[in-house]
Length: 323
Image (tube, rainbow, N blue to C red):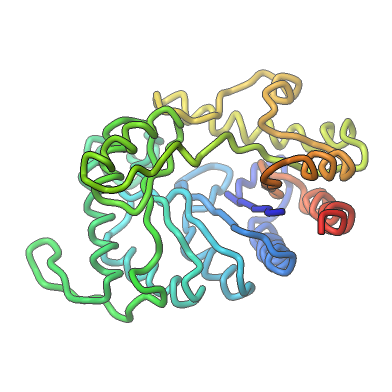
């Protein structure tokens, strides 16, 4: 079976933990996951958040890369309008070398108004800034001199992986989907319905049909010996996470799965987060044609000890029964 993890490092006041302690715990968890054969670890990026949401995903993945050997990493998503394209290219090339080619990047235009205010960027500039970042990264990753804003530049060193990190575009609109087909290596839609625009544009450009959308609904699972007690402990963190994203999404008409909800019971009903016993998870994974579990262990200010209790149940009571 496969399992994956993600982190965004929200650390709301009610969590009562230092950001440094959350960072340290995540590095330990990354090392733990790598040892157990985790397929991927994803980190995200946002800026100026009261809860300390991770603003520097490249830095975090550099630390994780140094603690791991085989797990792949993804930045989903890196918000293009807030980065200098050349400096970003240099940072990603260094990360690619540190990780020996284990990093992929999803580029997005952003949607949180306060972030655009923070950086003094107009949201209207998103398409052109995304395009410039993607084209600059791909040119830089080729390892050769290229033209940039009217001058010839050459970034060194070259990436470890030929061609550098795989670059996808994120988005929830037809223009974003078609732009991804034109300039990126792939497309990660937040709204699966826009995949068909990407598919159409890829074929219009004379390339092979990429087929149906590979992106389905992402569910987060946590383990507990007693799921009701687990929901009592974890539910407030899941609800905080969902409503924090929902408040942002209310500013935008994109396809995010997050909406603000009144209480934990309403969240449970969505199935977006699940707390199950090890036996329940084993049963589900055994009958699945593609067994997969997605963990967000420090979700929404989750207590570090509680996060570890879920992961240890997976290690000791789930994985050994699936090999």
